[in-house]
Image (cartoon, one colour):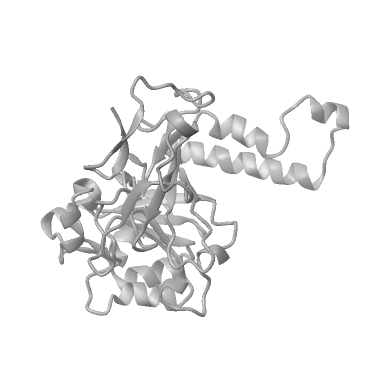
Length: 314
């Protein structure tokens, strides 16, 4: 058994103990105040020293996006009375105005209402879309030989023969390393890219009952009708797109934390995905390993760069 799998089993065991403890509390109020309570214990034992890996692209005006949406624009927020940008020197703060051409930008969480209005929009997704087991299925070797390769059921079965059955309710990310060329805007123009076959999607949802899957490109597949995405959305399933850094995540034994803005009636989500891996994993950072509160002061201040259209440190 691998160390990541062992850590995963330990976490499950801790959760089981927590659940039984909640059902039949046996400690007095005095005793309870002396020990970590509930999920705090799980955090201290399993998550505090875990390794955290960001799976999210940074949003800028020049990242790859479908030509049908067009470019976005960032600018300094202005005082509506003076029409002048707020400045640190004059106002004590600055802010940014975002003219975003679409909610299908960068790393995303697609709710089914993106294609099927009878299903939930981004603000209607349940709060349980927060933390889940994470399985990473790699098709990198296949893509190296065939750039347009799509995940097949056989790839999933091969993964399971090595790692065990994909957990029900988990998130499955498909690693292709397509995102290695990000943020080249030309990525969005590539007609050949790795994807996920319709049969694989049906297997994951109907046989393994996952929460949703994710992939690195900005579309699910290269079929003329985008059959995979069509099937997902019209059957009430969400998906992740534009995911990054899957090469740094273990195939099994990690969790994924998810967050996204709650736009009313939103048809896409600017999402942030963070993989949470065991403490001995070779990638990622741990709580306490970096400055958190207070955050680290930089010798370079943020300044507006008119050429890039964003704030950068100079």
